[in-house]
Length: 168
Image (cartoon, rainbow, N blue to C red; front, side, top):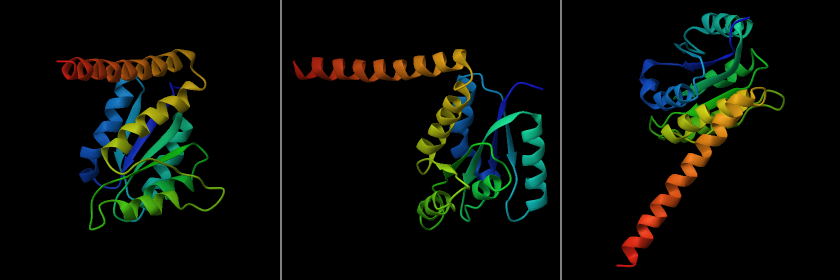
């Protein structure tokens, strides 16, 4: 079996600007991924075939953009028992609030982990996938922990800079 990977699915190529944050985080941790445009509504058979095939090839986590109809993550969760993370895209007349509700309101027994609307959520989806994979990979777990420490140090440096400015 090949190295575990993450599948990043988008209903449209217009989701890529938001989902690029997910891809960037996965690259940071050297996590293999596949990115694909597939639709729960327009290409349901192809979506089902891809999810089934990806799981058989070693996909451990699916990350799905949730655009206007926001059904991709739920459709994927109905096909696989691998973790599914839904990322509500901040578009449409409700700026992603409809996608958030559609993604988070899954029936009991078919969960979708739902992150924040937009690019912050897309970034967190990448981190959450890394943390999921790190459960069985001590090297990845150490890298995730180091990245968290690096972020903490950046905040501390900003505070030190602020304190120095205020002391003037």
